[in-house]
Image (tube, helix red, strand yellow):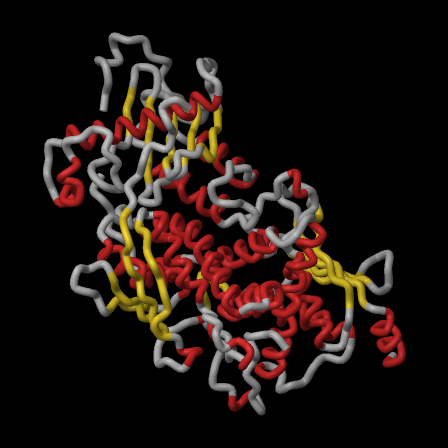
Length: 194
Length: 186
Length: 177
């Protein structure tokens, strides 16, 4: 397998010598790194959909690793097995680690049983962005959607995850909604578990 | 208005917003993985990481200048010091020191106290030629180029390759004055 | 710097108002002389097309910098590196080298200027009676850093099309007095 960034394996959380998860870098350092991720991927694609897909892929590998890290560190290798459990894990624990706060909201879709939405008034990756008209609906949140998909998928909850701008009444800037549509098998299993 | 003294890297780092270093580290890991998939050759990945770092340096210099109150970057020694003492601290929260000056003051080393890019990283056998942190050398080169210093920046020690520290060598090639960019008949 | 006599002889516009509308226009050039941004709030008179206008402004600053450095009667460490070149007008300098001017005033407008060591030039044209705008230019530089430089889809060197930057700039400029 091609890949670096292999996560060191520790038998259990007590042996973990590194990364109490308290270290920080400046937001700018992340913003510049993220900008370059976007800039590089822009050179690799012909259209916005492809660009979002590539950002989502990059996010996916972050999500998969975050799950591993958090399970080792905070949960003694236990993983959520129920739908609502994993959703609230993403909305609170994962969000807090990645963005320093719990997500603004977690809602169930009103029209479809299999859809859930995590919304953020000002998603970190959209903080400094101005989208020119010719880029249409492009949303850097695709990266975060990828992270969410990475966490869910690795925890056994495959889903399609997308990022959307949602205009807010009385607000100049739209909020970002991460839309999660779970795979059929997930819902079937959930129904079985009752 | 007297020139303002540059702010210390610690003071700036304390005053800016932060993110969890893990988000940063894992995002960087994702970039490296993407490049390994796209480019396949480790040598090409090294080049691309350096280029991406350069692009970041070109942007980051303005944040550095705006936040640090550094008002001149004419003297190479002063500038190298500012990078190590202020630059690394304000962005990555890590200290660095300048050593190994050569006799004519155009080449030095920056040694990092810590390196948040490499948490969780071990190079697998397939990637032994990889300079995982090449983005950092690119950043230094790009930022210096924006203040008119053409440099060559290389890793001389890399802990991922078994050395005992992360050490960047910065060599000043030339200082490029500003020129009038238009031709008279334009 | 005050050019060509006192403002009591030449006709001047009415005194600046405490709030708003004291700014005429603004330019941002990068180190290669590319005009990244031209923003206009109040400019009834245009005499040139945009491209000529930008080029003239850049040329004015470039020459003025060279002139002010040449006329500098003081000598301190600033000059060490360019002492050989000091006699020649128009000899290129490193950004941040030599002395630098930060504003000039005519009877009808004031031009405030800031150049960073990275060669970014911010030029703000305002009412002639506006005060020292060096801190304002620094503030605008910070806006540029936040909303242009950190915008992940902005490519350095390209004209600035960042709505976040423009709106915060417009808002800030209205407060200049």
